[in-house]
Length: 97
Image 1: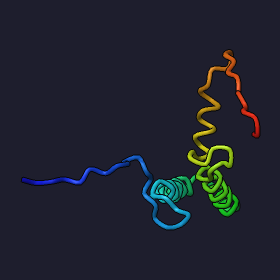
Image 2 (image 1 turned 135 degrees about the horizontal axis):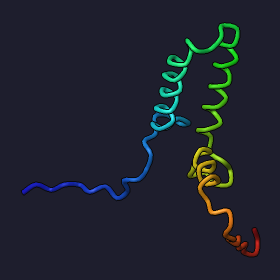
Image 3 (image 1 turned 90 degrees about the vertical axis):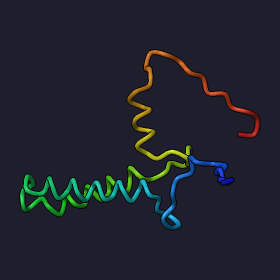
Image 4 (image 1 turned 60 degrees about the vertical axis):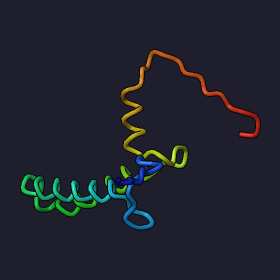
């Protein structure tokens, strides 16, 4: 009879080091690949500006906002675009906040 260990939590992100998660690494690799594909279409005098823009964009997108540390910044941007703009949702604060 085989006994299998069932993990108690399967939704935890895979951490590569203290600051970098697997998704962050894959996102950075994706940005590097995008830069390599888009580089022939960028004027030679703008290559460094384009690279700097992609680095800053990548750092901004994988940063975690202080208001919701479990989500990344691109989640906040997606939620801002897809939310219903004509509906009202109240924010209830408890005492001490």
